[in-house]
Image (cartoon, rainbow, N blue to C red; front, side, top):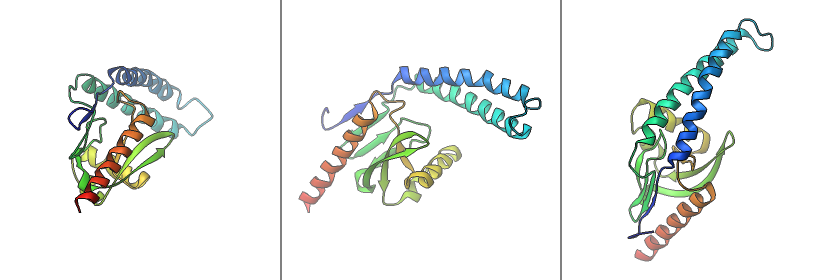
Amino acid sequence: MENGQTIIPLSKRKILLLVTGCLALGPLSVWVWSIANTQTRYYPLYAQCAAVAGACLSGWGCVYGCLKVFDRRPGLIVDSEGIVDHSSAGSIGRIPWSEITGVVSSEVKGQRLVTIMVAKPEKFVASGGFFVRALNAAGLTETGSPINISANTLQINFNELYSLLTQAFEAHRAARRADG
């Protein structure tokens, strides 16, 4: 922590692995589409929908990953004013300590997340473009908060991230109590 500020850079290696996975998903989706009407395991429409979803996810993931590889902003900043999150597509940016009511660990579909509980979640769901709002609304439904930070694109593992954010929140809360 320098000058009361901790900076966690984006992990270009993790992001490139994401892009590689998305590149593999594209041809797999095309193959599923090509056999959808001849396979007998699933209803053909179900297979076609899965193929379209996979192709969309593949394309979106590749574009997002390529943009993130060249993003020079830190993935996460923790300072005396709050948290600045630029780690994912649903990132909100600055979250002031005054808005944060807790830091908890969550898991959604096997994905471990640090969930930042906030006093007015609807304020954060309403910020950003359509896609960011949709992601944050889904996060609110799944975890109880629109702000969910993953270590997947950061140069830190989940346990270190959770510990860092929990300790920073507790330190801010203790300082606020001491000030009256």
